[in-house]
Length: 421
View (cartoon, rainbow, N blue to C red):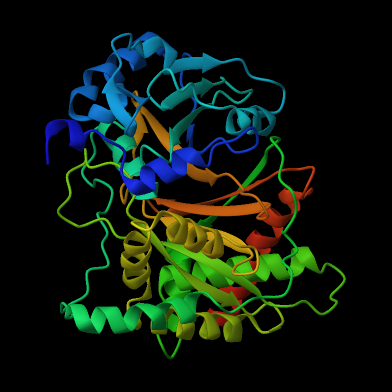
């Protein structure tokens, strides 16, 4: 492979870039709430710090250009740190300001990232909204990027995750397993999703926090131990149940698409791009008992992981991608509202407390945008002892997302109390 070929966007990165439209911006947003300081954050100092760390992150100074062979990464000769690290005028409502940023497209004539400093707020806290285009980095790679260029040095870098199965299968075995994984994860149409609504350009965000130790304690209390992600899915399921049916009327189950990172443990921090697959998990919203909901979810995710569905689907979609029209049809099927109702991601962030410019990060949140026929997106990220949960909608399609944040918090309390009673 030549150096020129190495600079071309991967199939996944190019596909994600191609999804951008008037309504879809294509980026993720990481929100850092900083502790109050004696003075407002020194923007020029922050720019110098970030600029001094970019040498190890080639994508940070590259923009996307198109030529006859498709999009490729090219050095931006006019790169200017002041256009990427800047202060955003704050409205009276922080969440309105963050919603505006979520709805604002990144400038394709420049590298596809931006850090916006918001505040100081009335209590002295300041907020940094970091936007990174999904064509540049997926969830895991995005956290590594922040750790490399923004966070102060700390003893515990973000966990490197990978699903690597213990034993490699033969090509014949893999070929046989792929259709089985396809039937398990796709091809099981669900009833019409309550989130299957047209999505416009407006964005509304809401956030809540649950303690990581509490999620672990709930998982450890079950006869068949549940993972943190299982417990998180059960907490979200309880919140969705109450939000969709506040009067207690019967609710149907929802199918969640759960991204699975296939990044290797030995990757360097500069290894960007997308290496995500997924599994689909049925959320038993009709089940009243929170512990039974958790046990049902744990059993399903354990089976999916044991069968290696995420890896199989990754291989399958990349194989089909070589057949242009077939690959596009497969992607449309996987993203259909008949295959899943809501995407729920969970990315491991720093295990230790982190800071920016000497100011401790009180809370770290993640937000990913909704998609066509998927008007709600739920994203979680851990930081030190907390898990921040971000909700993103088009408020014209799906209003009152702040109440869902409240119901997720109440669902955590209900599950934790029931598990440890």
